Picture (tube, rainbow, N blue to C red):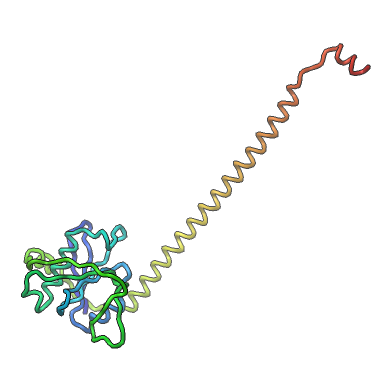
Length: 209
């Protein structure tokens, strides 16, 4: 089962989720979305907490209040960490998590660097606010991944079709502009010929001579 929370530290509220146990944590490591950010108490056992970023977020610039919500939730769901002050919480993009066959269930490392933040004490106001939004439900991770990929592919196809349409319209506009320039040039030449000075009778006689 997966536990879901809503953080009102940002508007619209952000989705936070975590596994109920280490077996579910293992599933979340495998199926977390690329735009998810993973949180854990450093060097202590704790829940694996994830934040699903909105399209306008990046993990380098997540709002401090949202980071605090996730860190407090991690601390509150760590048997040892919840009893200690001045703990360290680590977080990193979900696709930076590294899992090898020799690791214990729920254990991970990282492909690249991670970020850390320090949590001085548990803030019950934050934890209680999040717990009031808690919903537990069974998740079909594989189907969820299939649906996500389908949605992302549909968005990519729509973007590609729109770009193709814009490129065609731009090419058409350029051709029209080119044709207009050619017509203007031809028209100017005809005007020059029409406006040639007329010869006098004497000049015509000289030409005949």
